[in-house]
Amino acid sequence: MSLDPATVRRIARLARIRVTEEEVPRLQAELNGILGWIEQLNAVDVEGVAPLTGGAQMALKMREDAVTDGGIREAILANAPDRAGDYFAVPKVVE
Image (cartoon, rainbow, N blue to C red):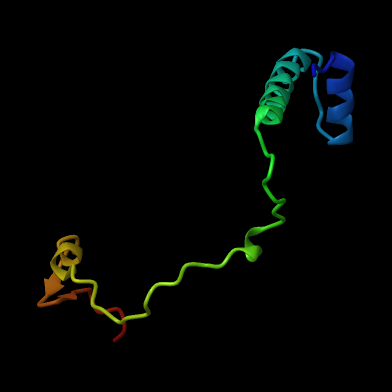
């Protein structure tokens, strides 16, 4: 499918986008490129694939809910500009 300049102007008008005559060829090329990508989807074999309306139909994989300290305390505190033992040290902001 290829769009002509009149169709590009009509799409711009429907989208309420102001397009000058100098911009029409560029937009025509971009829109034709997008439509080319969409046409490639027709080559995908979807035989036997059930339609999916969203991710809600899939069961989510769950991990064990275990409390840990992360095990990377030193790596995290290495980024601190100042530290007091195992904690970030910050200036006092409330008197």
